[in-house]
Image (cartoon, rainbow, N blue to C red; front, side, top):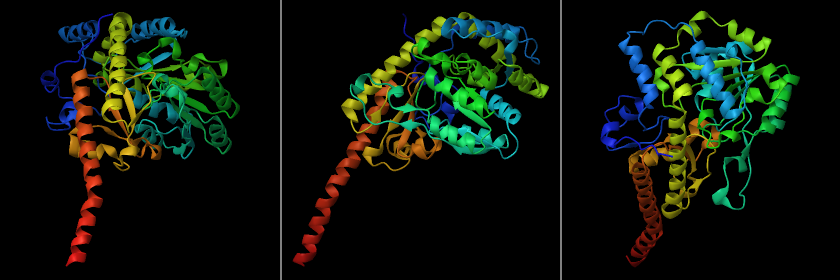
Length: 416
């Protein structure tokens, strides 16, 4: 398999997205979830064709996206979907808020599972709900750490979810794969979650935007595929935006597979659907129908970046803990042993000129952590870890010399 290469840094710095405009050129930007690879050729051609045809009016028929996505889901994950069960909107953020508005009343509790993608907190309040935190369960160290993955360390707190639903929560906002951990929730946990939601008449809104980036596609379980209970209570949100790097193209899907949840989607204002971008629609059609080989190349490049990161940390920053993700290009790094405070991203930016995502933004459980974007060149990743290691070394040297300086000062005072 051919391996994707990230674009040269000088070329990347010509981009105008937030990743390349938020910081000066001496900063390596590894914070926001954008990949440094060029667009897949079929996607690029489709979007150029839209421009050449001046076809940038309001969205029309979307069956052309529903059918290739349904085929992709069946081939990749064994998930069978009728194209008529798929709706489109501008992005997963809008899809999440609008689905929650249908699922809850003002002030109702919505369960989220931190550490989790920071906008989840905002989605709930924007939809009129109240955040109910049920953090993921974290286990201790396991043997053969080099081969352990995120699934060996984290899982859904099903007892906590049950207690929250019993206390009145009306919905669950689930992230699968879980950002920032790269965790693929197990089929057993998803089935148990669906059973709980069904028992308490709650709705599960499931963000599966990182699903196409599962390292082993057979290991990813779409929520709606696990049981009749899941199909009764679930609404899935997904997009080509993460798998094919199309976040700015603005096209996402909402999927329901029961009369109840389809009625929720059909109750949405027409404008929710009309916000879909023509560029995003046709780029997404090409992604699912023609650009799966590109996706597989991207996944292999990301896997190699994850392995490189593991090696670099072991050699240069052994105090930083990295648990191998099962999906996507996000690395969740534990800096607590280095003593860089609750938000190590501040030290990383100010002292190392490396921009990372602040762990505390993912919830209280993120104190002492950062999120790093792996979808970059080996050279950029190597330079970033090298910069961080030099800062760690300098801070360690300062800390080690402080007691000696204090002792020398005390001796001087005594001699005086």
